[in-house]
Image (cartoon, rainbow, N blue to C red; front, side, top):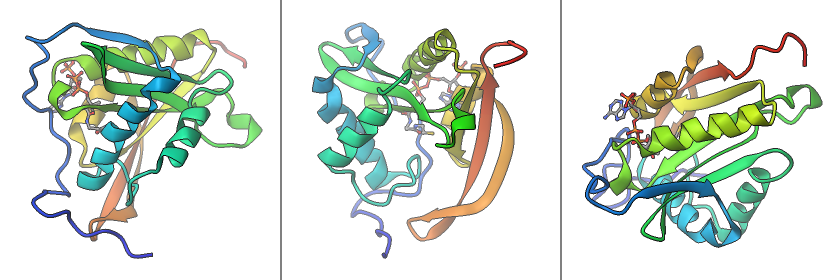
Length: 196
Ligand SMILES: CC(C)(COP(=O)(O)OP(=O)(O)OC[C@H]1O[C@@H](n2cnc3c(N)ncnc32)[C@H](O)[C@@H]1OP(=O)(O)O)[C@@H](O)C(=O)NCCC(=O)NCCS
């Protein structure tokens, strides 16, 4: 399978930046649980990142069916999927799902957080992730893991500001747009219970 080349006019390998959004002057941003009607808006946000940046290591846009599977995975059992809504429009989402499938990993989850470009850099990502951690803690998730492209300094900063610590660095474990990508692993322990 050959990977995609840069889309015309895009700067595909840039790390995502916090854009100059209009969130301050716009309608209030509300964080709520995702419902099935949010799927299309979430997929649009996600697929834009797939096409243009290295924040996702997917090479090709996910189909609606792929996305339904992703949403199912992030809403089954005690998993949680949140959206940020502004003026009736979904402008971002955050969720956690399975970290690894073997039974012993059940108290650990892995998060994802994505915002519409125009809503970045105004604290919405931080609100989404903080709420997600509260939701996970309430469901006895013991450890949350984030796996982030090393170049994605905004997402690494977001996670660190909420207490995540870097615990791993995996050089060149992926590639996209014709170059190797390094993966940073961060984690936060959500409770101090001595036994599971
Ligand atoms: C990553 C993302 C979710 C962050 O959300 P955001 O709303 O833009 O970030 P916030 O405004 O809430 O900022 C939260 C933290 O991110 C970091 N941050 C924000 N903008 C930054 C910038 N330009 N440079 C470095 N760090 C930055 C800071 O640590 C900030 O914490 P602070 O306010 O305590 O200083 C958002 O930018 C996004 O969707 N990016 C594209 C998709 C993506 O990379 N998703 C993560 C995949 S792992």
